[in-house]
Length: 332
Image (cartoon, rainbow, N blue to C red):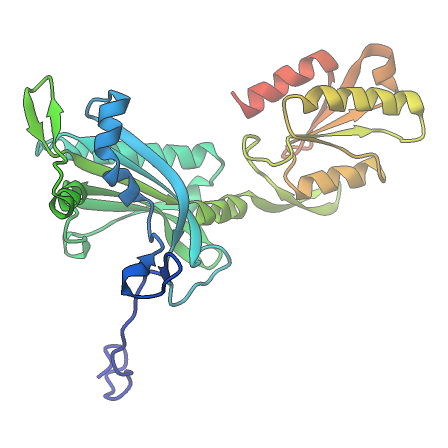
């Protein structure tokens, strides 16, 4: 009977299913050419563990990070880019000593670091939560696992996971390859297979979380507006340079000069089409944090109007101050 309904005959007959995508390498398509697209990025880190130790001159604890494509034959890809069959993954394997009292502190440290990083790129704190896996739900090799959850429009889902994986992966590679994965600890004068803490992130669902956090609607001067409140570090367009009018050559020339100066450091946009208010709204909709208006006063005292996307406040600053203000907000 179905565990959901209790009715016999509601379930289909068991069928084989492979979560990995199978392909063939080379001209021949037979059993010897079968290969699989990687379902995660982590195993490449483990196979290169000894190379990194030998060439990187690293000491435990240390980490190896990787970002790249992964492929999973998902039965139900859904919710825009949240779950797809081809996705971008970021993983860190942080190698630690096998001491029984070591892993808990490192595990909590990485959970905290991930949470702080999410806040630093603009995720709204009220949309973040944690899901600590109970012992009966852990993978057979895991000592602990905590997911950082995010409340999307379609529900609360996993954004990242942080697992204490013990020495399972390195031990399995050593067993299958016949090559030792032991690390010699010079301070302790002993060899051991390091244990690992693994923070893992899906880039695509993280981008969706950023968009969800950034999207907002409010009212400015009695008019509704849609705005993406990206953190300035993540905004694709850092600033827009807007000449007040486009039919005054001296004003256009000054605006172009400001644009070219900022363009050396940041991705900025020049926009001279339409009323100034309409141009502000266009930039709000794509999440541009700063609008810089060049007007007739600029020609007299070399100051411009700097408009903040979130507050819509405007202030006069000198052209010389512009880059310093942007650096503080974007890189500071």
